[in-house]
Amino acid sequence: MVVVIGAGITGIGAAYYLRANNFPYVVLEADDDVGGTWYTQRWHGARCDSDFVKYSYSFKPYSSPRCLVEREEIHRYLRSVVEEFCILEHIRFGTRVITASFDTAERCWTVQTTRGAFRSKFLINGNGYFSLPHKPTFPGAETFAGEIVHTFDLDAGRTFPSQHVVLVGSGSTAVCAAPALAGISGSLTMLQRSPSYIYEIDNRATVLMRLCQYLYGRGVGFPMHALRRYLQARDDAIFVGFRSFPRVARWYFRRHWRGTVSRAELEEHFTPSYSPWEQRIPVAIGFKDAVRRGAVRMKTATIERFTADAIVLAGGEELRGDICILATGFQLDFVQFELRVDGVEVDTAGINFYKGIMMGGVPNYFQPVGVWHSAWTQRSETSTRFAMKIMKFMAVHGLDQVGIERRAVQYTPAITPEYLMRDLPKLPRLYGSWELPSLDNLFRYRFAPQKLNFE
Image 1 (cartoon, rainbow, N blue to C red):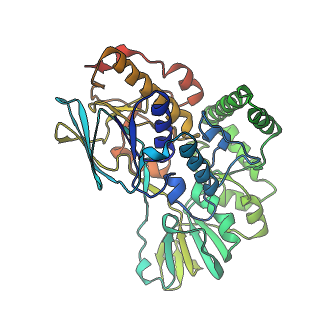
Image 2: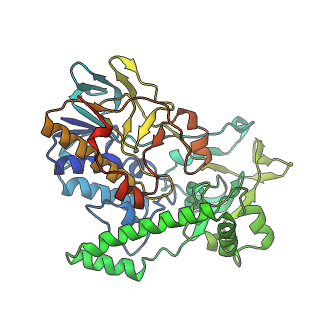
């Protein structure tokens, strides 16, 4: 038996591969439906910012006339996957994991949940890492007569007619939410502490995408799989190119916004102090038009304090507002339960994390993760298949335990967004891959038994 924690994008993928390799399993899900983030996050404009034909699973590529799709559509897709591949019957909803403890004498995991205990030989953790909102503390916030709400707690069914909305943030959440909020608010000001590089796309699928989707629907799968590899190689090439030639990248973004905003607005609101792809680049749909029309008003400044009816900015300017929506990101929560080995709690801060799948000193434990700059599934699927190779090898050779030693490793994050850097000391240290899925998937996930410790 294998216990999978979480029925989000990672857990569902793990369940599919366990089923395909004839491993019995159960999926423990704290919520009452599948989807993880795509079920719980319901703010205005919530969507995936990777081409969904690439973000969707390799075993069930998704066809759409649009490149990026919204949260509701992603949730329907994930629901269709668990139904089509008979995963739903293996999911235990409303089952939150409290502790997971491995006994090296019994070679077994005991997982304590809100609905009893589960025992398994292997544990696959797909609990994600965006479970808690990051809510900055602002002086005077308690005196604000209006409402302060984080996108984590916001439902897209709400509207704000005749109300002045201030959206605080500059990352992907704010860029996705701003055009949607502008359409249902009296006015919208997007208040950012500092600018981000923002890239606007035409969301219509290209002719190549539509052709590959058409052929896939007719039973010809190769073009679709080749398209997914091409899109990933393109993303990796842009990532490396922008990091290698920052002056060219900065020129590209200045040119991208020229004609939409004035030179002064470009310098103030769309020119960050860092180089492109040092932090994640938000992908926009309809944002340029909203800014051009004045539906989204940009303001770049830090918040000094709140008053009863306004936000006071550094320098003394006041922003009047009825609703303040915080698009200030999330706290990274890598392991959302107590993890123990032989009764001793595992300190995951700085733990070595091999190929984004195995932690040092934690036997029979797999935690597939994606990369920061691209579609999550492009590495999480590959690392899940890597775990399947390990488990099959153990079954064939009659082995009961696998792990890697805990040791210090050097780790420099591929990107340095604030949400990552403020929690970096608490996070595992990734190694064993280049964090470029187009190359890693070919060269870095070849199973080499001699590199692992089997018993």
